[in-house]
Length: 534
Image (cartoon, rainbow, N blue to C red; front, side):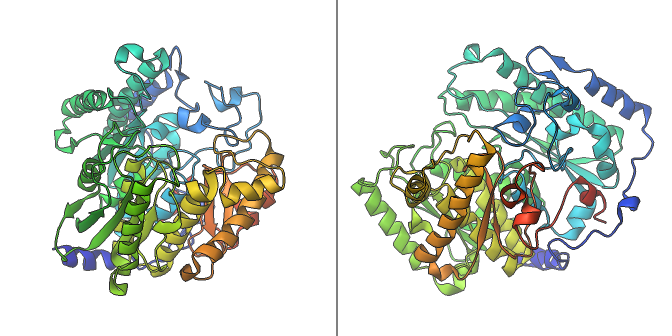
């Protein structure tokens, strides 16, 4: 069945990754006249107020305000017009499926969307509940031209809170808002006469031991809403992670695949995912992405998952940990021994530490491998890599596959990886220190400092890849800051056909911040282009 479905989907993926829009700006579809039911729902959105969160209509959400560099005012609770600073964003209203101006949830989701077959893109609207309540009228043309809708969202994580009694008031209200958004968005979509065919939700970073219990509580509340809206058939387990939920929504529209997993350390526990084990997180991710486990060689794709041994620190880079070294070397050898005819079916996940590859041992011996990932919590990096791998498997686009693989390696290993970047003795830190600069994955404070740091990053990343991984072939990477953090940056393969611009500031030095000045062949894909797509 998988192979038959695969052929069917290949027939629908013959278009270029970002073919030019089929309509001119003057032909952008306008929203149809609103029914009384739709107007009533929008009025309800307009009137929502929270004492700590403010209004949600035409206002920034938490994802928008995270970090410096994009949203004009980090503390603004109201409409953008109320900010004291001028709005210099390149996009004023984001794509309905773009969670935030960050690499994984901005540029990567734009790229991944175009790996979907045209039939799916024509029929299905993918909408984040956060976005839909921000600018409902602006997303109506997109919704109205589709036959069905997938709703996507997340519940913010609980950090280290040990019970609901320890939650600050803003967090309590935010969880209430997130549940309210599900209900309101369902009502809005139903008022348009559109069926909802999937709802994809997760709980964000939650290291507390209370997190598994809270996850069950939020899952139960979500399911009660679906019950009340006659959508019981869409109930699914609430996943960990959140950052990759839109990629998951894309991947779930494709037929199942058989996955064979090789895990270096299945019993290692993960800090941000409620202390769940690698094996448990992988199983949940597979269920959610649409993958079935196989132990034999009848797999469609296979995953090699580097891991840390159960006694190792979840945070600190430990170069002298002999137990970890032995595990790493053993698994690195397994990677090197993958037969060449299985390269295009093999993906690599580095789960040794959160938010970046541990070292360069996880780099594949060829650019023909299917996918690579190690950014974010283990759930984020695991699910994201599986999702991209599934999309690429069906898209059959070797050029785009190579591009995404190389971009992920450049970002996850050399820009934010521990041995290569974050460790105090890393090559990147040494290079920055030699010219009086610092590596900061939290936030730089001035645009000039960002310019100087990213000039060094671009030089260093390109030199290190050639030095460490010449087997990946000639490639030039351009790293662009988004939230003024090394951790939040776009990485583009220079000259690639699938380079897509994310959100950027228009008032800063274009040589550093503007992808259209910095990268050749970069393409624009915003709400305007989305509405003109067909």
